[in-house]
Length: 489
Image 1 (cartoon, helix red, strand yellow):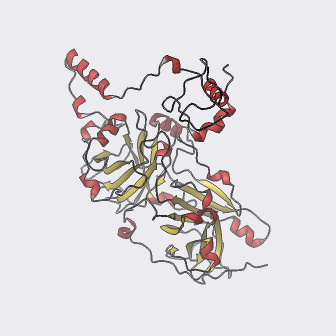
Image 2: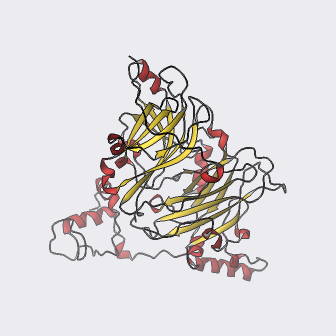
Image 3: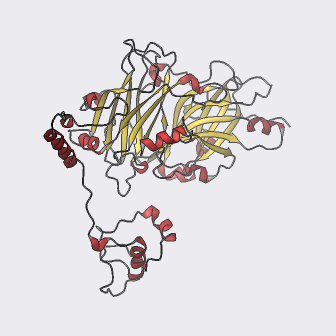
C-alpha cells in the first residue's frame, strides 16, 4: 500500500541572509498571558523520498494542534533548501504563540514538507505540557519502526531541532535572589587569518569548571559537544523531558552561525536560569564558550560536532558578583577582550583571538531590559588585566599590589579575606540531625507562623524551637527527602 500524502497549504519562507539571521533577541519573555514555543530546525538525515520516488525539496512547517485541526495557515515556516536532498540543513528559528491557559492541552507539530508538490513527508507531535519552561531541549526526533514499506522509510529519518518553551515571566525559586543570568556575545574582535567557515558557539554555565574538564577528558557524552535527547514517536516518554536540577555540565545552548569567517559576529543573547545554578556565583562556577566550525554540523549527522576550535572561560566568582551589583542601572559588566584559548586560530597580528561579551544578573520575574548591541556597550568594563591568561581567574584591581614585602603581602591577604562573604555560624543548639527535625515537625506540628504539617500538640521542654529563620526545607525535595530520613531518635 502506498503512502497517503497530505497536501500542505503553507509555502516556504525566503532564505535568511547573514545580516537578518543575526538580528538579536530583544526579549526572552512571551507577551502577557501567552506562551511562545521557539523551534530551531537544524537539519535531518535520511528523509523519505516523494511519492514518485524523487528526492524531496524539503522545508518545515510548525503549528499547534488547534491550528492544524482548524486548517489554519501556519506563520512558522522555515526556508527551503537550495536543492532537493534527503539530508537538509536549515538552521532557521521559527515560533508559535498560544494562550497560556491552552498550553496544557496543545501539542506543537513539526511537519516536513516537499516544496515541489506541497506534500507532507512526515510529522512529529510534541506535547507542550511536557516541556519545562525556558529550558533549551536539543532533540533528535525519530519514528518507531513499524511494519510496512512506507513506515520503514520514515523510521530511518532523524530530525534535529532545538525547542524552547517561553513564558511571560521568569519563575523565582526558593534560595535564589536572582531569576537568571543573561550573557550577550558580540563577536571576535580582531580579523582572523586562518578561519575558513562561519562559527557556532556552545555556551553553558557549569557549577565546577574543574569537574567539567575531567568529564570532557573522560569523553562524557553530556559534556562533549551538544548533548541531544532522543524522542521516539508516536508516543515519546515523558521521562525524556525531565530536567535535573543543577547539572554538573550545565544547560548548553547553541548559537546561530557567526560570520563572515574572517571576523565572526553573533550579537546573540543567552539566558541561563537561576534554577540551574547559573546565578550561584562561587569559586568554581564558570561561563564556558566553545567555538566550532559550522561545517562540522553537516554531513551524515548534523549534531556530530568535531573538536572545538577554541574555548573561552570566565569564572563567575563571588567578587565578580559583588562587582556586578556595585554599578548603577543594569547589574552587569562587559569584557571587551575575553581570550579564546586552546586554539590554533590566529589574528592578523599573529596573536590568539579575543571576543567581546557582556552579562547581567536579572532579579525581576518580568525584567524590562535585556542586553542589546547598544545598551551592552555602556556597561562598566571589566579590566582585562585582572583576567588570568589561562583560566581567567578574577582578581580585583585593588589586590594587584606587589608582594615585595611581608607587610604588603599580609595586607593583601587580609583585604581579600574582608571581601569574601562570611557564612553565618549556626548556634550550637540548632545543630540538630535532619531526621530529628522532620520527625519533630510531623509529631509536634508547626510553631506559630508555619504551614500546618500535622496535628499540633502541647509543647514541652524537649520540643525544638522552630521559626521561619531556622527552618530551611526546599519544597521540591521534601517528599523525596522523607523517604530517606534516618531514625535519629
